[in-house]
Image (cartoon, rainbow, N blue to C red; front, top):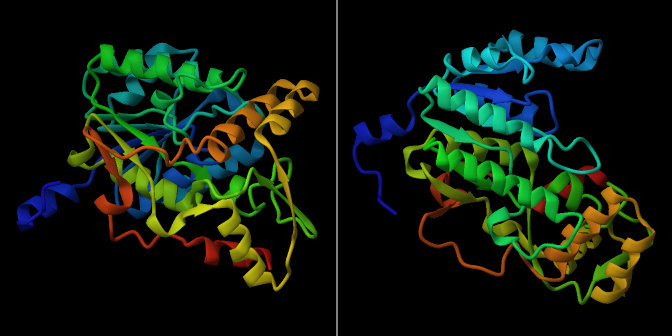
Length: 325
């Protein structure tokens, strides 16, 4: 990786951009809006008329406006409004939901890709991915593989349209995987017993969502990441599930009873679950049994976020878990 030497090069990397966030009221989207504002970018947020009487979304949008964001009326049911919104900015970051237990709207991004192609002015598009790299999940289990397949459909459309892109793999969101010690169906630490996936020694990557948003904005506006995949792998947060549990036990002063589940028994649970839970089981299997987040090296056409942006003081899981004490 080229070392930045001159002041001119440093200024180029820090240039102020016009950034449009699509899905800015969502779980990750609201953090991306905040991160963009903190980075000093002129930040635009789509305001969709479909929010109707959802007062919480409206109030969140108005809070962005108070912080300096520009609200842009646009709708996926009004193509010209998308084109007009895109024409106002340099960078588009999509944060549309793609998980089965919330909403699953990834393919709506095809309209966004088409609008960007028509507008013809966008310097970078970051599609909504942020979890496991879909390009590595060709053999993923059903029904969870739908998410990866749809993300690859979006990638294909982006690349066929020759839109400059950055793909971002943020690995395990701490809110869903760390505070609960990677237990399913809960978001808080267990009090007595914890389930280990296999021997619990497969390496996983846990990242605080605010840090994910910061890395997304930095990567989206950095010339070094154009047409590349960026993996968010903060080195001190590459932990096995067992190591995460040990951190919690040290902080809480409690030793939890460990119960191991085999891959076969874990997958057998799917037959009694709904589609959303089945998708979750499949993703957990790929992460905690197959090690899909860490069983490869970052190679050509790829970058690692914490190396690109060492100025980010990312949250260590020791500190993250303290809030649950």
